[in-house]
Image (tube, rainbow, N blue to C red; front, top):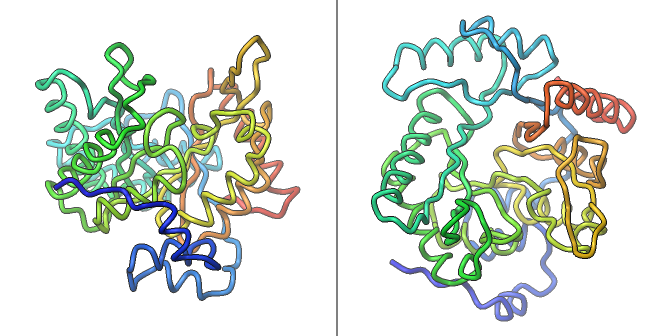
Amino acid sequence: MNPKRSDRRTFLKRTAGITGVAVAARWLGRDRGPQAFAARPPAKARAIRLGAPVFDAPQDPEEAALAHKKLGYRAAYCPNVDLADRDRIHEIARAFAKHDVVIAEVGRWCNLLEADAAKRAANLRTVTEGLALAEAIGARCCVDIAGSYDPKVWYGPHADNLSQGFFDASVENARKIIDAVKPKRAKFGFEMMGWSLPDSADSYLDMIKAVDRDAFAVHLDPCNLVNSPRRFYQNTALLNECFDKLGPWIVSCHAKDLAWEVEMNVHFREVRLGAGSLDYTTYLKRLAALPADVPLMIEHMASAEEYDQSRRYLFDLGEQIGVRFG
């Protein structure tokens, strides 16, 4: 099937006067979560589960879980394990659960829209197995980007990455992955990108409606959405829009920061947390107020030292603004 994206103008007229999660709820026509969330008063802020890679982590699952806790982490990226190694999967799941360290995500970073048919099929299997691993090990989600039509860079920009054909192909891939695994607890999501769909909260809502699977969720990386001076300077509004519209579906988040590298054209550069301009006060407060227990995972730091600096930045900021970690 080729589900069509909704007519945005018709949608806005139909939902005039409705805001935030209530918009998503009425548009999607669901009786579950979103309506209830919209009707509830704001939840008491909870402690955020922070996570990051642990360098030189022990191979023993229990020691690995304790290594995360030693740094104050209560979330982790999925340890490297083969889907066929059921005993190892069970050991990891048991050890991390024992020490209350949630496995936040299984990352399967490959191009689901690869031009070569054989490679594209292999990538689809890789991501499907990633979701199966997430389900087996108790991870919150499996995540990938929707893909790219760029022939040289698997995540690169291409004019057709913003097309209806890209949208339809991504919807089909999400359905295939979810329907093959039929997960009962793990979710599957695409990271939003600045040059391919979904590239905004609204386009992600379009995709949620089109995929029409309970297991399809949102993996939020707000830095990926900053693709213009307007979004850079108004990233507080961008963050609020993402949480207002996508909050009920967010299952895991990434933490990094952005600086503007001044030259003769627009160039944003990923930097350690606190060295850029992302409004982490708003990010942390909105994340802590979500009804669900959503992990925040530091990524793309240049070194173990930068990960540690970013970790300490979040702990210090949290203490200043009244957001707890732990």
